[in-house]
Amino acid sequence: MTEGGGHTLPILNDEQAAALEKIRESASQVPVKPILLEGITGSGKTEVYLHAIHDALRQEAAQVLILLPEIMLTNHLVERFSESLGITADIWHSGISQKDKKQIWEGVLTGSTKLVVGARSALFLPFKNLKLIIIDEEHDQSYKQEDNFIYNARDMAVAYGYIAQIPIILSSATPSLETFYNVIKGKYSKAELLSRYHAVSLPDVSIINMKQEKLKQSRWLSDSLIARTTKALEQGTQVILFLNRKGYAPITLCRVCEYKLECPNCSSFLVMYKDAIVKLLCHHCGYKIPYPSACPECKREDSLVNAGPGVDRLFEEASKLWPDKNIRAVTRDIMQKDKDSSTLLDEIISNKIDILIGTQVLSKGYHFPKLNLVGIIDADIGLCGADLKASERTYQLLTQVGGRAGRETKGEVLIQTYNPTNPLLTALKSHDKQMFYNEELNARQMMNMPPFSKLVALVFSGRNEEKLKETVANFAKQMPYMNKIEVLGPAVAPLAKIRNHYRYRFLIKGSVKANLQKYIQLCLTNSKIPSSIRLKIDIDPCSFL
Image (cartoon, rainbow, N blue to C red):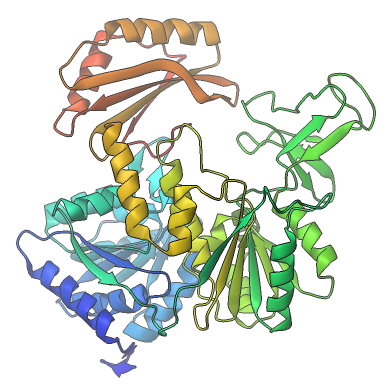
């Protein structure tokens, strides 16, 4: 470590030092460009931007903002900042008290607060002299607020930097396609880290073809994954079993009449949970019922079966396979209920937990020294569908969770799939990020989709479906023709009903130079929308449900 005014900054290797120099060069340019700090998982991106923060705070009365996609990461990172920078960061997110929010707000406004680490809303704090913004895991979808005031904190931070002419560091191992394309176009600079911090190579990635490897009854782990997990445990290392699906089973159906239990309020299946009381729960509206003894449709007793696994079912299976091991299921809900989520992280780091079974919360930027094996249970989730960004998000998610393996010694990732020849999985296996991004960009270009065009989603919703249909039809009739703007829809939204509100959607696509805001304003001027109908205008949508 290097000393600096009562604190210790990490010593950078040659590659990190070169990346830091690129960041410094970019910050000195006029106008200032955002810079992508792109580094493979475990390459030490945090160490680089710790030095950048130190540089910024040396300026008189300077302030720095670090945005994180996951509030559970804050305590972990704040400890590192305090140790390295000799300054206590203020933490800002929705879970802190009103008293703390007031104190932080006043500290930021007066300039006494120098460093803020927070969720997306931290961007709106009244900084007096902000000199640097860092967006950690810039690709993460949680930077987009989907309800009420809709915005993307990453994009607003970039706009803030442009207006204020301050440096913006976008940090990620798997950058968003928009950021990747902006680097190609020269709008953003880039600093790159190609090697892991401890000179450990990336984990070996193996594909398990589930068409050939048949699962035993009531099993979701393949024999290959079970054998490799057993070996890793015998070697004293830790294992992650990753499945991006909460609960015990995603679908409950009748084996007699094939009726599937759905939420009465939403277009979604009820998810089974085995808590103190076995229940069925809707993830959209919270509707829940006790687990029925008979099919609600045909009334046949004991005819219901549970289709597919969630993390709780996987936990049950793993507990039977390795009864002497300490196994924990981890989801965002579990971590948020735990008042001190850092305790869980400490238990993992100290090797008190043998197997972690969890959802995408495990893909965040955690460093587990003893974790050497990651098993991905259902890689096919997200590989297909109507969502424009499904492949991109799946690649990012699987790369990130796989990157938890072998941070200090050689690791391994095993991927269970029924689609082993999918190009996305081929790119993962060969660690060929450039191949995936190039193919994804080519596909977007062929369809003239972002980043080669611009999109706006208009989502109409209302309790009265007939009134909603009438409103949407009238709105469509009043939409004017405009050159270089294409209207797709109206159509029933993929998630057709949420909380008893029916949903219809338009997608408005325009060239990169088209003024879509002006077009939407013209549409709204021409149409009258009843007060019972809600219109959501989503610029650059991330979700297409």
